[in-house]
Length: 212
Image (tube, rainbow, N blue to C red):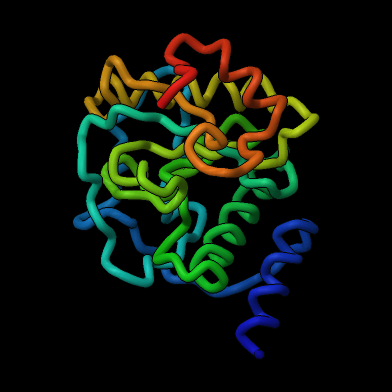
């Protein structure tokens, strides 16, 4: 009962945007170190490593991706409140991770990366770790989630640009296949994600595929 109340409280905080303050350990997600290196850069994308947003350590040993470079990039939304500043986005990412671990029972935040309305990319599980975002695709995809809810509202131009540049970086560093398929979350599982507005936008991107 207490566990259920804690989970409901976490979810309410995430959806409402109420500030919380907790002490967290810092730990990269990958098996050896963070998959984000200062050497992995490309103009137009700035990645905030786990240690900088205050990630909890995974609750279990992470599983490496089964396929690298991955053939799929899957776009979702967090279905939470939008964030305009780095402080707001960091809070959203922290609460999402807490919800995924403590309520969903997953070993970490579901996504490989999250992109905020501030135009910054937040490292989730990173480039080489299997996510928990899309059943049957986790081992062979990079899951990128837009922070916010995009059923009617459009993401910012900075958010879209950062996502395109993140994918470009993944291709450059051979984490994403050059002939990858871009899919909306709803194409793979039963969900409204990434929201109608965002889905219509990514359908215009070069690598979007009507079929998985």
